[in-house]
Length: 543
Image 1: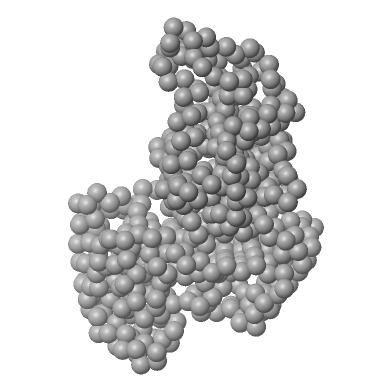
Image 2: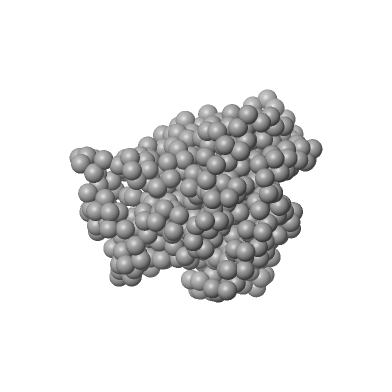
């Protein structure tokens, strides 16, 4: 049975906070075969990996099984007993709401959420609902004084291993189907929509600006679009060897890369690569926390003469390295050469000039192959609407539609000297401090980092400023546009001292595009307003 999210046995074993009984049921479900010829693969959604603070639309179900037109809720309990109208876990009083009522309530929560989304008639005419309590530790479950059917529970007497569990769960499914009036042969498109809708409550990714000490509480719910994409990947033909996700800044390409990477098994040899060493370092920290055995290197760190070959290669910010050299690299290090399965995450329309490595002919060859799956992402998950509107005013670039609505209007600040820049930065940091913005949420960005460092050298600011963009200290970071590509920050302070205006129009545009789209909440642009106005006029003239 397909588990969402996927967990390896090593990951499950290492999670001490997950009750052993839930781990047992997870492993049994993973081995259970409920497939029917011609029907979609059954799915078990589980909440064992979710942070406790996340509010689910589907109650607090431990497992939701989607089996063709059947939705079955499983409630898992350890040592539990019932006496004089009270449920007990060991000696602890758990009140009058027992596992059957909990499972029933969770079933109705799921049903209500689906009816609200897809319509009462559509759901009730096409799906059967049921629930079951699982007691892996209880040999002969009995609760005198309440009504329940034998098919409402599975205890250790019915199932103590995966084979017995499969037989028992099939009886539970048959019971609920026989109990429910006839339903239609559901349309497959409805099944896919329901599958992706449920997935949003159970499949999470860490926030890109995660706090290493508190990563579990920085999980983000997957969007409708991301769930749809992951569903598409699950159903791709085996011959599909190039999987491309394209979209502008903030469309969740890097987040999708993270989520797809988690789905690979630990015995598979995986490579994540990109041009930006800082982005590669970000991934190394993230996957170290999640104990994933994934090789992460910037493209310049790869050894083409190695005997080590990869099963899958994932390339982030692919527009930085799409050329014949990349094809040669894939041919050398993928176990299947150029026919090997590779994932590309790319913004080819707006970020291909900064590294000057993008070859349109190679890109056409990759994306137009018969064995390529390509998906354009249409939601901006990072920037607020005011940021998106300001980027359009400055650069005449339309970003994808925002999922985040209101926010601060970005500021364009005129600075004609070094003293002006220092004064403006100090004033901005003072205001951010008063707004309780953490220094680690602020990044100073420039197309020319050396130029910026010269300006602030020796100055004292409200917060400590680190020259090392990879620093994990509680301080403000400084980054060039190349260093911060693929990453984000809460507040971006973009400082352009002067040399940027000597570049050609499109290169200026791409540097400012990267810099101004890094901020989730706000950005400030400090520069000579006259130079900026001249640039904006030239952009309008060439459009």
